[in-house]
Length: 86
Image (cartoon, rainbow, N blue to C red; front, top):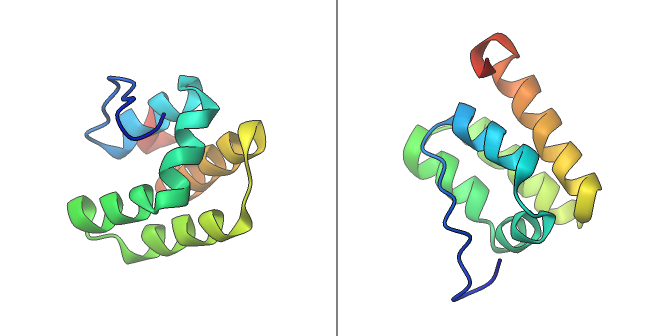
């Protein structure tokens, strides 16, 4: 949620990230998108420049709350395809 206020939730794969994004508090999504954490994570772990760039676009859009959640979910679905996320 903020520095020193972890949720205890971890994602180790795109599928796990997708599932967590559906249920985690939107405040946590806002915190991490503003810091660039999601883009940094996909670059560091998956070497996925395209998805990292998409996350940067989401960060710059300044979406928040449920609008941010829906955008992140849509981005992941589009990038990986629904079959890979099942």
